[in-house]
Length: 130
Image 1 (cartoon, rainbow, N blue to C red):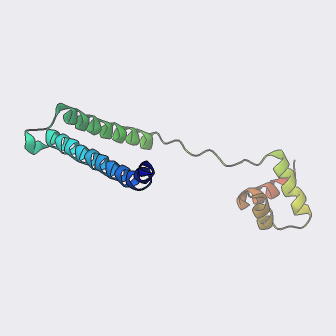
Image 2: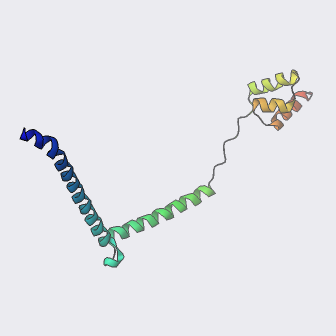
Image 3: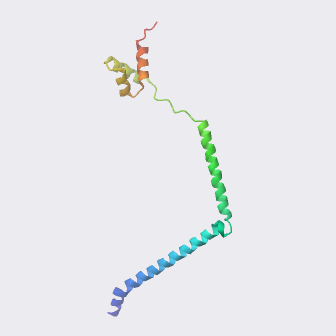
């Protein structure tokens, strides 16, 4: 009976206290380690470690490399690919729609091609040969 009382009423608070104490220990250990690392790398503590200097140099070098690549890309910019050209099936569609009585602006919007291409195709089609 005495053991049951110990397990049911004293063990949970004891475990909670043990967990709290271990969490507090880990927190304080982490804070001490962070303070030590900050002190070691701070300029007021006698200078920066060589690792920080190397890191700053590498970041500066990367910045200049990125700027050089951006400049080169601006100079060598590739023009965007041309829009879909008027292939044979589109020409056929344009002519069929025009023969059905649709206006060139309607044809251009429904086929998603520039109006000037539709007008040019219709002019070329109506030009007599020879």
